[in-house]
Length: 172
Image (cartoon, rainbow, N blue to C red):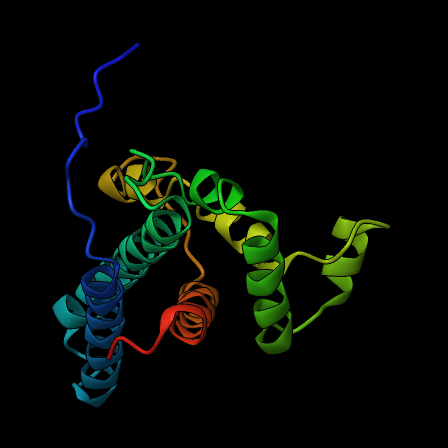
């Protein structure tokens, strides 16, 4: 049996959610301040373009790991893969989060065509699209760098945090 490096570790899930909210707030400030700066400030525009998706994906990772810790009463998975983190949640948690995402995510004809007869799962679809954002972001300068949908990442994070707060108490 492999040694559990996290044995005895304390997972402060309220602090984890606080950190996820803090990262989301930073993105909001970056977007807001970027909009106020002169259009000639390409450094700021590029910085916001590069920073926002990775901060949001990190925040989602932290928030999903807080869910895992609450459900398991122990350590979260050691992965950055957003889809793996989501898929490891209890079925009722996944349903709760998908229901929340359905209420804020627009349904398009592309969704109908892509999903076919399966149930529409906007959160899972979003996390699948961004599942390896950390890897793609680190190599953004390469030919196949990342393409990110910042608005959907932000909605997904909001749904995850709001549902967490409703289920385990408002942490901030």
